Length: 365
Ligand SMILES: Cc1cc2nc3c(=O)[nH]c(=O)nc-3n(C[C@H](O)[C@H](O)[C@H](O)COP(=O)(O)O)c2cc1C
Image (tube, rainbow, N blue to C red):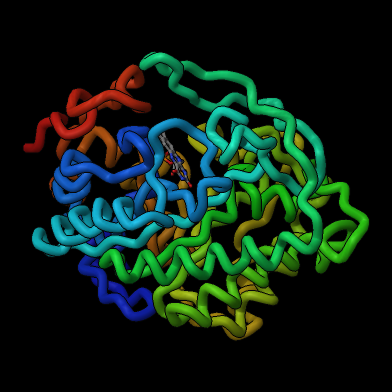
């Protein structure tokens, strides 16, 4: 029986264990530039089999929150180089999560104060985080405008370009953010996509944008360095699909020939219950569909896992388990899980924004 502490090959990387640090936005990158403090934070967590970076904007248009990092300017890339070097120096491995927020943004964060972009001009009933006169606050998202079909190839190229930038900044690979109600998830799901062109309506049409992005990113950096995160039923950021089971089975069937390093599934409501009322979903069927279509990559699961549940997931066929909040509060999470040591609790007040407090000062054993 495999355990969390067994090594595993993930695409072109060999991981010493199956414990992954989930992507975690911490809003500590002023002007979207990663800092030395971020390098210290990630290096502290280098014991993870794999670290997935916090979501990182592929372009200015892809930004949706204050002080989240980007991957499109020279200074941003230089900032990330310090991070990847620090992680590698501690023997770790790190992927970059590539992010376009779509409608989950605010005019204050957009180039020339323009409207955020989306599949359709539908406001997400959710909040984003802005900083005005030095004070951070959560504010409702701004009304988006629907993208013209002619603009979509440009965003596909932006993803491709960001993937190349990630590798040049020293990342070991990239995870495309297709989850949590951000741009690619907005296109996938009927609740946010009311288009009548080739990118809306039928399942193949709604999946088209994501699949175009995945093909281009794989072509750019090699599929052994590419993962994808999906969240079939999460209500995060006001997203919903009328019938997610066939949608995600179609998506993974189409993805199978690409031979991604991994698929990363958030089960249930992100950071909340693993079952969402009124939204039943069969993840095992999706994994089987992916495998039956020839996929050889690894299957990563996430959401509210502890050690016992994680080992059950491995026994049931998962290859990797991603931990989010436990990694925020426990830089030495792998050692703590190994020795069944108690875990530090997360301090909510310091999750988003600030400095070292609640970031790099959680105690190790
Ligand atoms: C502070 C915080 C920031 C997060 N940022 C991201 C992010 O940047 N990208 C993402 O895909 N998910 C993000 N998530 C979701 C986590 O990756 C994860 O799915 C969630 O916390 C559930 O896993 P857990 O129960 O192990 O914490 C974030 C969650 C938290 C608590």
